[in-house]
Image (tube, rainbow, N blue to C red; front, side, top):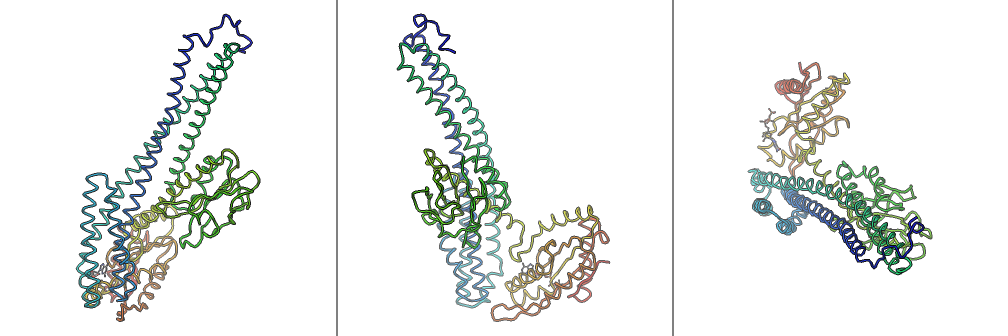
Length: 570
Ligand SMILES: Nc1nc2c(ncn2[C@@H]2O[C@H](COP(=O)(O)OP(=O)(O)OP(=O)(O)O)[C@@H](O)[C@H]2O)c(=O)[nH]1
């Protein structure tokens, strides 16, 4: 349109016109600034994502520190109970690694408060490790009773409880920081998108102006017009790339956010296929995660069609895993991995295998088939960045699973803890009321347990509690909940179970406990028995408190009736 409607050249303002040149220069400066802004904003998003990764690393370092102390304590307990030096392996390993783990955390400390907390952690850890070393030495030189006497004075337990609280507070602080960083990332990405659009609009404007000027001066300034075209195209390409980059960052952040809300790795099957096709356009592939046994990697998700990816992959079947870095193989070149869906890949495709590495540990494998061609290098870089984010997200899922398990279970018996019991009873009472179904509660108390502790030591008592916990787990259905109520008191919540069935269940467990034959080292411990009190909703109480009181009174009756028996509430 502009070319045909042009006035004759002699009346048109030429590029040589100083006014027009100034106008062009001003527009170019504005457009250049707009195009640069998304880059600045992207840098901000990059630095926030790095900070997020650092916070997650530090959280894991705290968790590892506590894990080392627990390993040392487990080794010490095993050695004291058995006298077998083989049990000291985790203890030796943990005491060896502990100073480095603590030093690494001190080096990462950022605030005076964190340094103060680490100082206290260091002091308590030293006391705890000294106590462990003393008891190990005592066991070696003076036998189990001398070592057990030191354990019994509970000094070590007090240090350990305090350390758990201190480390937990640090992890909570880091969790709050992670949420704040995620909010900041979301805001930055919002700005980024707006700036990307503004840059695109400005580029479109400059293209229009450049075309206008170029056509007006075409006859005299053919070369100048071509340069203007090139400049406009470069600007448009720059804006397109910046927008694509912003979009990829936003998609990656969204994927991480979605992964943050997962309760287990199996849910990746739902989340990843929604994001990976957007992050690697035109691709198809699969994500594998190591099984707990670490012998094979198991397929966790696929995208871009089923693709024939096998369920399991051995670490030695993948060149990427063997080299510990991204491995690419095209149709006519490179070493092909046996596990890839199409080996070798079709003419116009490249297979990428990218190990997912977090903190130097390989957590899984990203396998992607991408289009071969000029964008292949960009796809490879993107796949590497995505695998880093997947590794970060996966290790966060693993960490959350461990923390959730720790917060709901009792460490000694492996049964659910008191907090979980309170929540479960409240929830099951609501359900029973809604379904009009029965619900039974069974309170259990070990008989003359003080005598066991006083005669055979606290470790023997712990051994008994662990074995009784196993009897409870074996004796209930999957839908029942067995908890440690406190000390040597245990409790069962039996949904949809009437009085007769609850008494039968209690009898089974009572008989199993009575039949236990336990040894502590060479010493055969005396038979253990327990008393049971059963109460049923709604006959013995219509809320949690009265139901528990009824079960407790029935337990009292069982004790007074001679112990080692099951009594139903009156
Ligand atoms: N080993 C060990 N003992 C514990 C634990 N928690 C509580 N106990 C002990 O359990 C014993 C409970 O004793 P009592 O409440 O007097 O009752 P009992 O000796 O079992 O006698 P009855 O209940 O009347 O049959 C105390 O000695 C506690 O120290 C624990 O985690 N480990």
